[in-house]
Amino acid sequence: MGQRSDTLLRADDGATIDWGAMLGTGLSDVPPHYVSVYRECSLDELVRIVREGLSVPPAETRHPDMRAEMELLDRYRPQRVIDRGVSRLGAVYAVPTPETPKFPFRKERYVLEIKVAPDEAFVGDMDFITCLIPFIGANQTGLDRYRGAFKKYWESVVSLKEFMAHYRKVETADGDHWMAKVKAPKKLPKTFFAPEIMIMTPIISPRHVRVVRREILQDDGREYEYPVEPGMTWEDER
Image 1 (cartoon, rainbow, N blue to C red):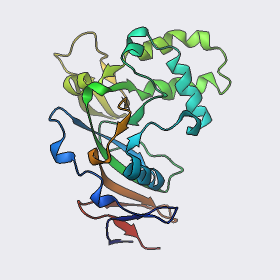
Image 2 (image 1 turned 90 degrees about the vertical axis):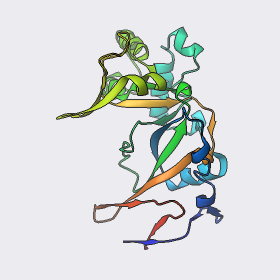
Image 3 (image 1 turned 180 degrees about the vertical axis):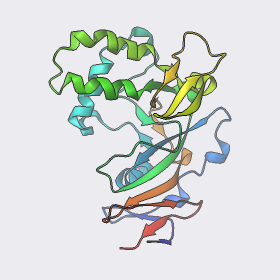
Image 4 (image 1 turned 30 degrees about the vertical axis):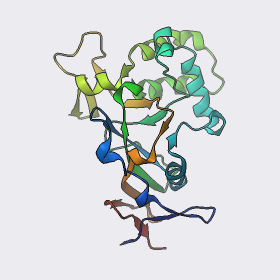
């Protein structure tokens, strides 16, 4: 189902890009306080990262429903959050482990490790959004009744630096949760059910990004995983 190949990406425009020579080349010399976060991407996005770095997509390119959700929550940010430059619409999203959320429409995905400055990223609980947004609807009616919930979401957002220092992952029957450590400051939330990292760095260099896994959903419904070793990629046989 797979074979060892070179490190070349063949883009839709016909260009050939040696991602092995460009991605992750600066991982060994990142500042010591940088931490690893993870996100998945498509082949097209991977090509853009190699060429331009990882950056926030223009608002007009986001799915309309997703953009509406981001803009809605941004309107309820407290001033302290605005002052720190945190915005859902202006963020690159990631999670704290390589087990990234899967998009059901994506048959081929690349899981990336990204090195970021923990004081330039923030963590919110995606479980809040997953539970609340469907009740609002696409027309965003009845917002006043949710005003308190929106504010509560922003009140629970912490810096990635705080999250890494004061939370630990706990396996439960309902999935992995992140619990505050015993000595964590009392002001911090007790639990994150689905931590979602908002990276506010405008552009992340491709030198600080590497592919750790490639997954392909075959026509028979089976998912094949291809670990990516330094200096090579995997190409499925067509």
